[in-house]
Length: 633
Image (cartoon, rainbow, N blue to C red; front, side, top):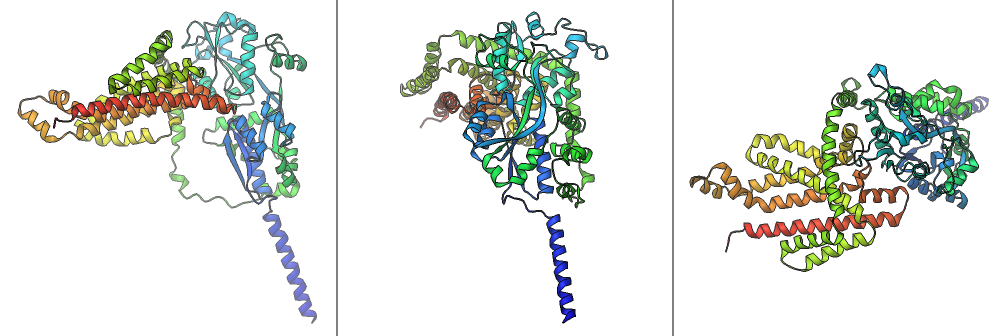
């Protein structure tokens, strides 16, 4: 009996110890679903998000996920409960949506992430002091304050408006963009500088990087901590000192109050109120989470110095090197879990066979931009002048004359009145909603893209139809051009040409040309061989066979290709707006960034109207050409 009791007691203690060990090894999360973080589109937020995710996954046994997006949509999602946590809310410059959610009680601040975020207007140091090592002489030795910019507008020349300088504003739709726009007017700089608003943070960083690598002047808003301020020697221009009461007055009424420096921002962690109630332990950890701008800059510098590293790698590096910081946020037991020995992930593919393709491409692109960037800039200037000239010509024409010309083209294609009247009504609708000028900007860019697509696509399609080996080589190339995400085209275009219409032109050209090449090839190969043989027997040269027989018979397919190219070029307008191409796409992007449903919807309807106009006209001409190509009955 005693032995049985002893064995039972021993078994009980063993099970208790095993259970305790399992509990220590495999903690149970407070939530039975993943903790959802908002993936704001800048580096410091990515670092903080990955750091918090690692601690929750390892220390608390939670599953986590990230929903990428921009500020306003993610703050709205935070209030709705679609997102649990945003690791960076710039409190003093937060959009109105955040304050409304706080007032409504749907979101709550979990305390300060870091208290010393900076922002301002910057120029490279070599612009003021030169750079002897790079052979750069001072360009603006007297430039120290924002007020001095009036004297240097020509130095920062805007290629789209050469009589003005270009100021790269904050990201379209952010609060800092509105504030910098107000400053531009308040400092009296609006007549001297264009207010150029990039669509994404990545696009603005690429513009700064491209200018810096080539030693060119650039005037830009930027913020920190970021890898850009860590990697490049930029000087913040002086402004009157920040005073909270005066700043609030300027923001409320910028036309009657003087501007001043941006405040040093306290960046806080925002969370959904219901999430905080459901997961008090996680909320307590996030409330204790606190860093400094210097710590974040060090993490971003690690990312910059290790091109293959990700935000999670930077978070792992922080956990390894700064236990003095993060261990204050959690209990010793949780800290032990975070740093405990774990099985290494076994990759499915041998690491020894992995190739550093990303590093090769990045290094090659960096050298290419440094060596040949000026040459590409010259070509870009020529293309830009062509686009701007067409845009100016269209703007100079009366609106009714453009509508009349489109109606005439539609009537010429159909010989009926229904289509001309319908298309005229659509164009009139664009003007009636106040988007006529923006539609002309989109139209000018699209026309130039389609013209160059035809100049490239038509001879390439003819060559593919004539040479089978060339066709074999070109088919995978065309597959890649059509399959690669269109954003990929923007990266090299940004580095070579900066922001604006020119990189949008090249990205659109690459995206929109393949359908025309394929359909020209298909149309020429579909021509019956007997007809060509008869022409050859009658003495027609290959050139005459092409011009007089093959191209006319393939014309319906060619027109279908032009139609597809036109539609794909128009579909790129929103993406092009992310890199500063103005027009209807900019309005759509602004509607997305500011959650302005009406603005985005109206601009979207205008794009649809333009698409219908060009689609119906090109289709009508394709049908007309089909009728002409058919043999008489």
